[in-house]
Image (cartoon, rainbow, N blue to C red; front, top):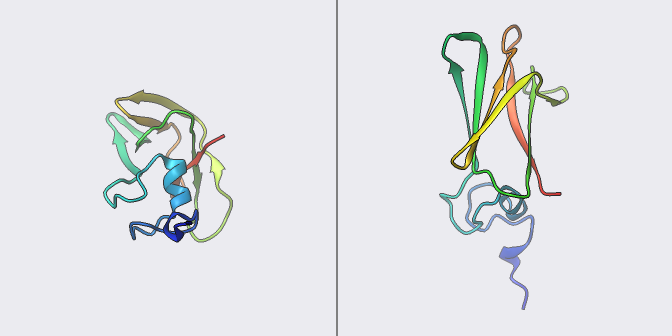
Length: 112
C-alpha cells in the first residue's frame, strides 16, 4: 500500500520543506528538528569578507553557494571568489569580495 506522506512533494513533519528537499539535503523527513542550517559570520580582521557556514554535509552531494544582490528578482550566480574548508560535518565558504552591494546567499544542494 502506498503512503501519501512519503510522496516527494509532501511535508511529512510539517516544517515547510518537502520530502524531496529533505532527501537531497540528507535530513530525516519525520524529524522536525532535522534541518539544513546556514549562518553568515564576519571574518576577524577582514572587513570585506563574510563566512558562510552550513551543515549537515552529506557524502554524495554537491553544495554550491550562490549569491544575488536583490532578493525579489535577478539571477542566482555562483559565489566567486571563495576560500573553502570542511570540519566536523559542516563546511565553511568565505566570500572574499563581500563589499559593495548588499548580497543574499543560499546553498544549492544536488545529488548527482
